[in-house]
Image (cartoon, rainbow, N blue to C red; front, side):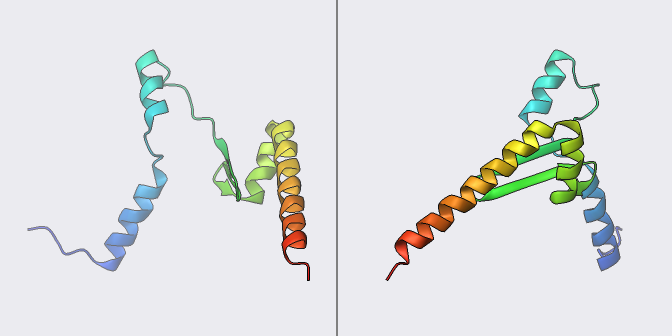
Length: 100
């Protein structure tokens, strides 16, 4: 008879699940062409209309941007430019619509 799930077992299970990376369509395609043995990139950067999410070498946010900047500085500079333009446009929109 299996034991009951205790809080300690649930936390250990969740920690174990976080260690594994999700398997997606790109992984399936790489497996088909034989590139499944290649090591993972280790860094990714998602840019949306409202901000960004970066992860590299187990770090997130601006710490990950520091790592990505060492590998590919042009990408991080483009991100900084995008965020500056986004901030400028939002400030202009607020200034325009909030005038009395």
